[in-house]
Image 1 (tube, rainbow, N blue to C red):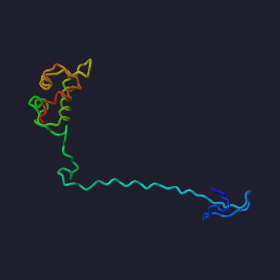
Image 2: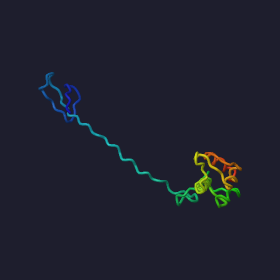
Image 3: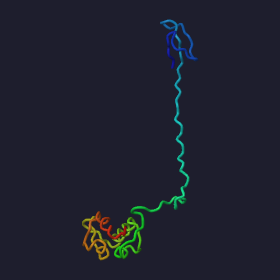
Length: 142
């Protein structure tokens, strides 16, 4: 790309003077645009392993609903272990429901309770599937 700058203008190192311009002498400057590339992002570097237990292997200690807690005897009869995380207990309850075909055939959101589930769900004949997580709360020690 060339630009014509009248005399007295900016002179660049790659410019030259021409006299064939209708306004007289002018500097013709060749302009080149340098494309600036962004630097590649630096690779992510993890911090050095801390002195906390379990951090050397990259395993975090269980917290919240993933931490095993002691369960009531009624819950222990269903899940088969004295301590279990809430997440695993819900999985085992759903496995029991599916195994014994305890969902209402007309409305799959309703669970028809057998004797083991009645012990956990406070003697109710049926529960909604969204209620299960709330109904197992009293069976976990804090």
